[in-house]
Amino acid sequence: MDATRDIRTPTHELTIARDVLRTRRRIAGQSPDWAFSADGIRSLRKTSEIGAGGADEATTSGVIWPAIAIDAEGEGDDADDAKNLPGVDYAAIDALLARSDAAIERAKKPGRAPADPLVYDLDWDEDARLEEWRAVLRQAENLPGVLQAIVALDAWNELAVLQHAPWLGRLFVASILRQAGITTGAHLAAINLGLKTIPVGRRRHRDRETRLFAIAHGLLSAAEIGMKEHDRLTLAKTMMDRKLEGRRTSSKLPELVELVMAKPLVSAGMVAKTLDVTPQAARRIVLELGLREMTGRGRFRAWGVP
Image (cartoon, one colour):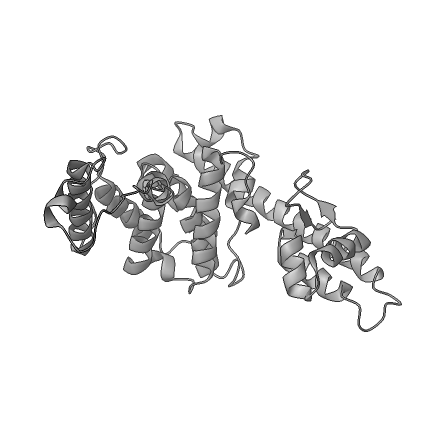
């Protein structure tokens, strides 16, 4: 429930980050070759479209229509009175029902829904660009895994395959590294972190060779950042384990250590549920372990590895 306790409207960047995280988890939860299968590509494209332009459902789902109080007079049903109730806009109700019926019929039809010209450039043929990008993948399939990833990412950027989800290409590239066995089966390389260290001018240079070298350096940087984060977490785990020395066997601290190592953020509710304690006891245990407060808020706080 803490996720619904925002103190301000989520920014566009935060919404994109949520979509990226959800997609990463979905890819990581499937087999290494799933992302490039027909079903995987279709599913991931649908996810990116919902994240980019699917505000209608989110907007309408939170609307609460005001109830119209009707004072019934007498007993029994009166068809004439029911058709002429005061304060009821029947035209608006009919229009709403018509839109609902049309939406249901569109949902029943196979294939993708027509693009909204307000959101999408109708001349942007994503299907053709995607097929062109997959042709590049087929040409590079005999290259080593890292070179495949570099060529694939450069082609994705140059072709601008998807209008509203350029980040999906970097997840596809991480899947290439995973499929080639360069990363572990349950891990997708955080390529974005490495690419951020490379100047934009090099990543978007007109010369293809310069761009390829920039992506290669970005992958190296991502690997270095990942190793540093691994070392940081290992050191934090060692320091927290030292606080467990001499504790009673009934202590909840070992369970909290495992939880905070498995989750990037933990809230009092998560700790209370996992350790089967009260929220007050959860906060006390968190302070005892010395976790780092991440939100800077007085309520609905969250903690992470120190």
